[in-house]
Image (tube, rainbow, N blue to C red; front, side, top):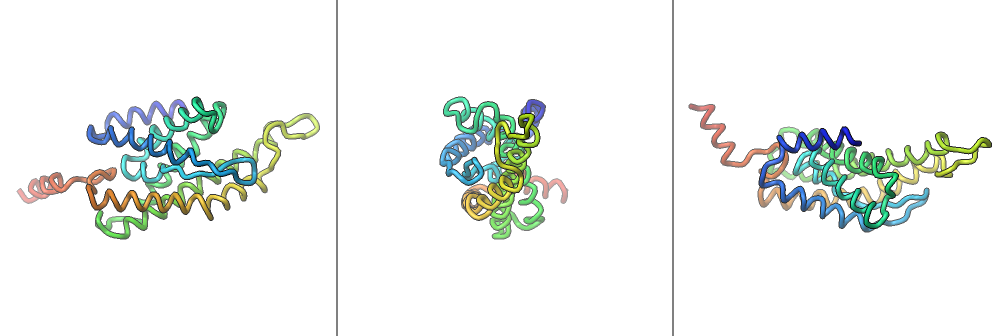
Length: 220
């Protein structure tokens, strides 16, 4: 994860606007709060919303990497949540997979539709659902391969006792039917609010003043 964090930091230096810096801190705080509501699920893990999709959509996926990684590191160090030795895996699943999957699914579905259209809200909801479900799948795979990678001479698993046929369905189904729906709702509600208040905050979108400036330059 260190090369990813380093590259993400470099990207933020060029991509993040000055008025978005407070939003980055607010996003990390928001993610910190909602991730504290952990619910145990079968297979030896827990489930929760993350908020990574909306962070990726608003600030960009690289900003999502930084915001969620900071959150996960603080939770691990302060509360032991997620485990210190699993920081890299957690940061990949939630800090990389969710913002990138969420952002690009949103862009794929919304296409060239008007920034104020309801299609964008629907796209954000689908992005939230898909991103958390795919992240859960990644976590399930990581859990399930542990008995293959780490076991005693007689084949007894050292860490995770469950194989892929248990961990993947447990993680994916519980998230797809529960936590991912919550993620979709959170993403859509926040997206709709920002859409109505200041749509230029969305990653890659121009303000009305910037659009007018471009139009004048083209017609000049």
